[in-house]
Length: 76
Image (cartoon, rainbow, N blue to C red; front, side, top):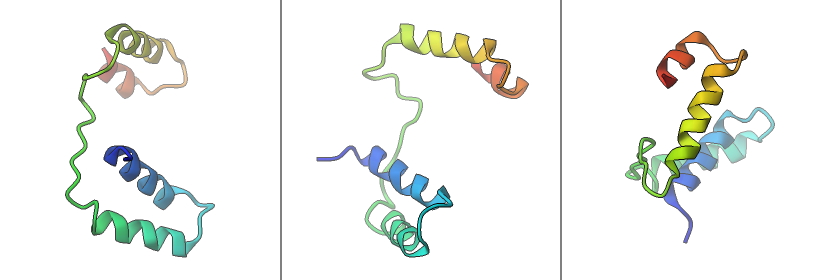
């Protein structure tokens, strides 16, 4: 079975993609508003994630010159 948060993310990406058809976007919107409307996504979950990888990603964000100061501040 698919991970529900991955499915939701895929449909949201489809809605934001300028290269997908209006029919495809309408179908994604129907799915998000219907059968996936009650799916809760916890983006702050640390379950199953390697703390060292997370720390490395935050450090890379702070050092990246292409990242906004606001994002760098939130990564600290």
